[in-house]
Structures are given as C-alpha cells and as structure tokens.
Amino acid sequence: MSCASTSLVFSIGANKNGATAVEFDVDLTVDDQVVVIHDDTVDRTTDGTGFVNEMTLELIRKLDASANHPKRDKYPNEVVPTLEEVVRLCLDLKLKMYIDVKRASSVMAQKICEMYQMYPDLYKSAAVCSFYPRAIYMVKKMDSQIVTGLTHRRGILSQEQDGSYRNNSAAKNFILIIVDVLLEWAIYHFLWYFCGASVFLICNKDASVNIIQDLKKRDLYVILWTVNDPFEKKYLEEVLDVPYMTDTLE
Image 1 (cartoon, rainbow, N blue to C red):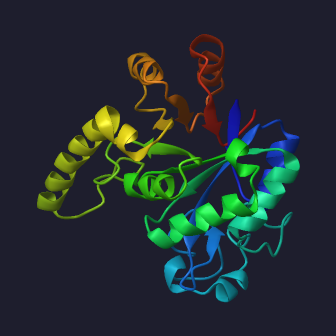
Image 2: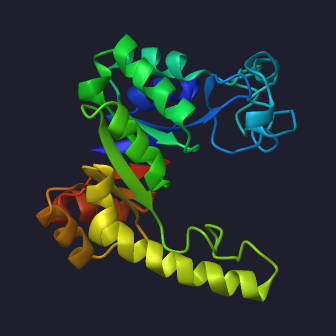
C-alpha cells in the first residue's frame, strides 16, 4: 500500500495515480471547526497570516490555499477544506484515510468521534493518528471502535525535521533532548498500549528491520513515512512487506 499526503484536489489526483490511501492533518479553528491544514499557522500554505486556532472558519475560508503552491496556476483560488469535505470526497473515491490530529484537546476528540458517527464507513476505512499520545488516548476513550495510531520521529520535541534545534537556548535543548529520549522509550515500550493504538507510523529515517519486526510481533500495523526513493519503496514492498506514505507515486 502507498499513501500520498494531500487535501481535496490532491485526493482526486492521488486516486487517479493509484494511491490506496491519503494522509492529512487537521486542526481546530477558534470557533471549534475542524479544518484540514498542515501547519498551526496559515502563513506558509495560504495568502493569509495567523494561527489556525485564533481564526474563525469563515475567515480561513476566505484565504487562497493555492497561493503559495507551485501548481497554483492549475488550481487557483482553492479554499482550506473542512474535515467533513475531505472525508466525503475520500469515501466517494474509496480512499482509506489517516487523519493526523494536530491538537490534543477534548473538543478535537469529540469532533472526530462525531464525524465517525455521521459517516460509519470511517470505522473500516480510516485511522486517527497523532504525534501526541494524549490526543489518541482521548479519541480511543470516547470511542473504542475507532482505529488509532501513534506517529513518531526521533527528536520530535528538540529538533525540526531537518535536524536543526527548535530553541536557541542550549539549556532548553539539553532538557528537550532528554525528554525526547524518555518519550521514545515510553512510546515503543508501553504508551502505544496505554493509548490503545493498533497502528504505528515511523519516520523512515528512524526505522530498522529489528524495530519493524519487534512492532509487528506486538500485532501493531507498521507504516513508514515519508518514503520517496524508488529503491526504498521496492525494498519495503518486496522484502519487508511494509506499507509506506509517500509524496510521489513515481
């Protein structure tokens, strides 16, 4: 199985190009509406500025979500979609969904559970995942039938994905590095069980054959992200039999 990271327009493209699933991130507006957007601000992906959780849905919907995209000429004037819009489209296209929760709150958990109640097909076609164990715990506590997964990469608290440190303070970085080590140990040893996760999404840079096999022995469904190298894809498919998320289906 391959999975492409996407939103409304790209869900259609992913389906046409052979993806079997899509992954997208969700956040809450200030008026408690769930929108599909990657960052906690609208600055990078729209022509607006500000934090998602400080903006109303009406205001966010006025922004151009294609403004900073390389294919903006082909897809002009796109709006930031709501979770329901993306869910309905993916169900129509028969795409499985990995809903990445960016906010660990009871309101978010309740909104997710309400979406499953509105669209029961989600129980067999979607998983709720998050870097935040608490987010997964709350969703699972509210509805034990929802498939949930923990997402993790090494140094999630202390480092950006490119390896640079999040803080300028050496003391803060030192503390966060220690917390990162403890968090990784806890996630791999017991947090997945405590949170009720049955899916484990690992950064491909952190994965190893031993780790993958160990997680599979615990009956966890393992997925690697983000795999774009064609040789790595072939190895995962033909040797390890491990699904992956990718930005390209080439």
